[in-house]
Length: 126
Image (cartoon, rainbow, N blue to C red; front, side):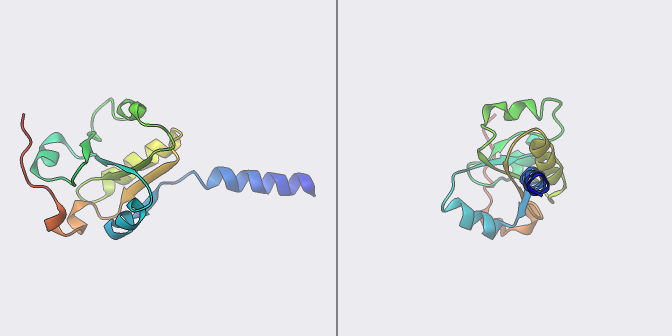
């Protein structure tokens, strides 16, 4: 019986880290009051240059080195990925979780789901 209980506990501890957390922008704001987050915009550079969340960095989902670009982050860092609609960021978040990152968040609905007054529309200097 002890072996079965240990096996069940082991299974659930592995499963608990097997999916990213999908949260909306208001949930992110609440979580960020207590935790430091790295914001990652996974859209293309042109999309990122058009508008972005303040303090976000751009790591293009379509870049062949997408996963490698996350090596600068610790696998325990809180990382929020976002894109235009949420599709790329969710897939990217799943990739990160499968590669050992534990605190990965996906912005549900992407930037089209949040108030436009929150976005930075200033073009970046090239």
